[in-house]
Amino acid sequence: MRLPRLATIILVVLMAGTASAQFLGQMSPASVLPTNSGKFGAYAILAEHSTGVVGSLRYGFSDYLEGRARLGFIDPESGDMGVIFGGDFKYLLWKYKENQNPIDLSLGGFLEYCDNDYSSILGLGGSVIGSIPFHLNNNRTIEPYARLNLRMQRQSFDHGADSNTDLKGGVNIGALFLVTPLVDFTAEIQIDDEWAFMVGVDFVAF
Image (cartoon, rainbow, N blue to C red; front, side, top):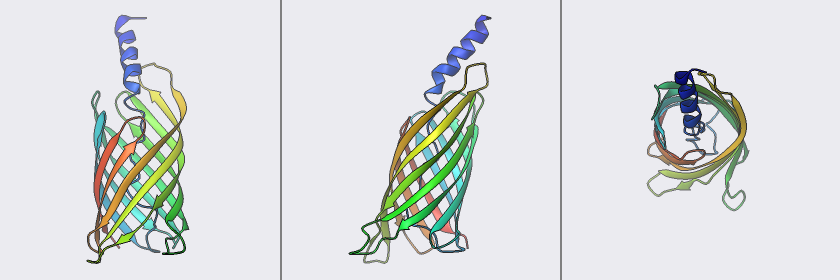
């Protein structure tokens, strides 16, 4: 094996640990959008070994089901900027009602794909999301939430190293702040293969 090829493979393997996280996060509580309504969103990602920007479209299919599509760019510390996209859904099992249901609780599924100059990552999994809305006196709402995800994740390399498939999990903790009926802000911390901090804004599209 030629020395440059060996050096490339070693570099790829060393970089694998910094590229195998679930990047898109949750960025929404367990509650779902009203039927036939939608929101556009944009948020920034500051992770342990990468940064990124993502746009999203959420849509309420029913009073209990919401779907979302996301597309963005991720820039790792080592290597060129890559594209990242995914889709997810959540089904509302419990709706918060004071003195009845203590939280909003949803079950969801997601797919995420990330590709850059040295590897690609495909994740497919499920999640449990819980949140509690707190309505303030000024007609604003703060909605803390948490998500636990479990997924199968496959990482393929472009320079000859073996691909790998692993069972992985992660936790997201954040809060949505409803500023007006049309605009809300979200901040989130992700604990996964690498930590990440995310902040974003959503606004009613239709």
